Length: 171
Image 1 (cartoon, rainbow, N blue to C red):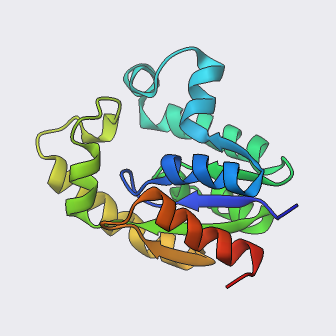
Image 2 (spheres, rainbow, N blue to C red):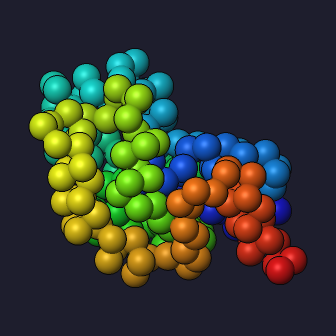
C-alpha cells in the first residue's frame, strides 16, 4: 500500500474528480474534505458559510483535515483554502505526499461556471475573486507541493495516470 496522497490547488483544478479516480486506481479510499464536512453537519458548505462565516468553515475544515490525514493510505481532496492554515499545511506535509493541481483562471472559470456551491464565488466578479485567491494561495501551493501538475485542458484520466506513475515509481 502507498503513502497517503493529498491533493491541493484552487477550485476547479480537478481535485475531487482526479482524487476519486486516483483512489480507484491505487486501491485507496478517497475522501473530500468538503463532502466530509457536509456529511458531519448535514448541511451544504454554502449554509455553513452563511451561518458561521468563512472562519467557522475553516475551523471545521481543520478538524476534518486533522482526522482524515491520520487515516492510513488514503487519497484526500482538500478545499482550495485549506492551505491558508499553518496547522493544515503541517499536517498535510508530514502525513503524506502533497500534489498541487494547477489550473489557470480561465480553466477555473470554465469548470466552476455551472456550480452553485462555491460560496467564495458568490460576489460580483468570479474572475476577480479567482485572481485574488490565486494571488493569496499560489505560492503556498507551490511551496507545499511534492509534485505539481498543470490540469489545463487535460482530462481526468491523463492527470490521474501521471500521478499513478509518480506514486508507484513506475515512471
